[in-house]
Length: 203
Image 1 (cartoon, rainbow, N blue to C red):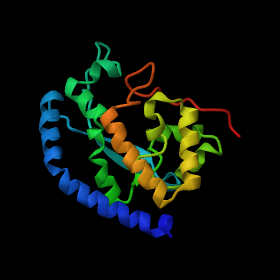
Image 2: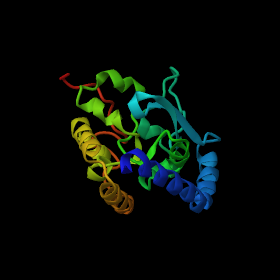
Image 3: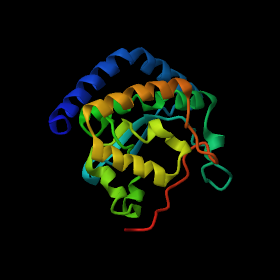
Image 4: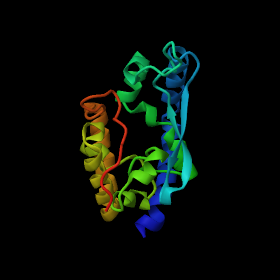
């Protein structure tokens, strides 16, 4: 009953209230990003959701579009602005995804929505992460976020799918708040963002 009905109801109510409470923060971040990013504020990208259905995720843009002489984007670390780094480490860049939750594209809690190009790279077990709506935060995020391997991350995602429930969602919610203040697992060991997933052995 929780998975089929109450989770969606709670998501909608929490996202609606969250946008109202966080509106002043929303406005401040928009103004600061408009200055540091020279006008570009939001980041839109297609991501797979429930059952692999494609939707556009909304986030605050933390990096500029700076390019080299050949027209290629500079490395992430060079494009990440000082304020963008603050927004990323405090997870403020996730706030616009509350709009995705209102629309029903996402849930507050669930496996993070990844790139569409990763869909054919999952093995049968990893693909189970799409049996639920993707979330703003999830079991993998409170257990390492970008500091763990892709394989570990997918194991956490599938574990969540198999154990989804109200008490687990509450646990993840409060652990997420703790992680935001501690600022753990924001980056991987070798990059300011997570390295691309290149696939694992198919089952």
